Image (cartoon, rainbow over all chains, first blue to last red; front, side, top):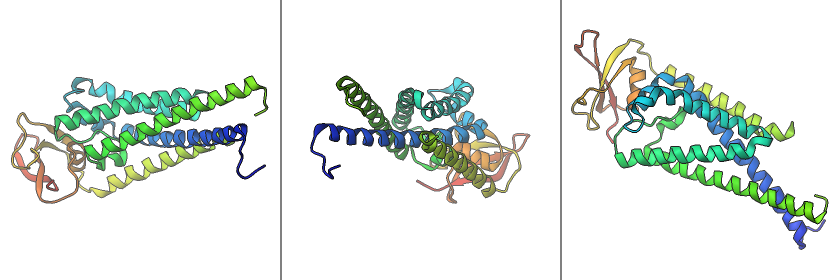
Length: 165
Length: 95
């Protein structure tokens, strides 16, 4: 095989492999993130519930959310782990990241001085640091979903052209 | 099985990190006495009104009120079971 493939088919094959690697790495990153934060929140559920109860947005729903959020994170990690459901895992993780990022932005605008209701070592971050971190992760999530779509398109084109992949 | 390798490694790492950080935080603080803690304002000059309280150890209050390590500004004050203020404080670093 040429070191520098010039035909379109070889180029798209290389791109497909890169997309697959990108999806693998991003999925593993989110599995790591959600399992870590989910377990940390469950370990300190009482304190997590107390911090949530002080938030003006959450208030009375703190106890329910203190169970719901870690369970949602761990379920999303499971969806990402299982290959056939990985796409749904990426979609739900994007939804979660948007909700968390929106909540952080709201708390920053409110300037309440409340502690971050985050799991594990993320408690050490300031609200601004956490917002930046979440925006970066949301971007990675979008990149992962985009790669998924590109891979799907490549497989569809290859099937239609009857060229073995 | 190879396809699930990265995911399984991520899960194992996450469980390891969460176990490590949970134990690390518990060992850091030694005071296991339960008090009712009243949170201070951001400047550390007065307690919040209406009172924002937490019942538990100083480590729990530190975590619940978001008081990072430090020694200059009051973050919370302990009260006994009769509502009497004690000279026991959780302090935070001035921002």
